[in-house]
Image 1: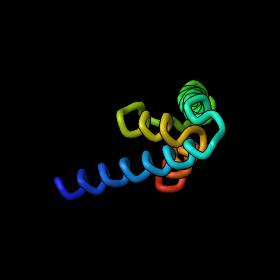
Image 2: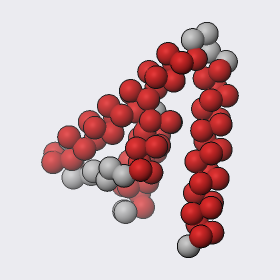
Image 3: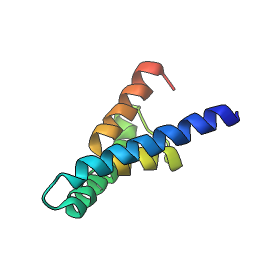
Length: 88
């Protein structure tokens, strides 16, 4: 189990570094990162609000919140695809 947690931590750090690198190339990096975080959190909230209609929800935990805030809406879409295709 420690190996899996180490791999997950490494993936989280790698994705965070990628987002920071991409945001630093923008004209206003902090505003861009904040906008992405807000869009990701709103997307995660919208998915869970519409769960009654669609039957698909994403559990709110540290991992999904991290993906939504750091990766934004594309991260939430990836979580949805994983949820639907892999039937978690």
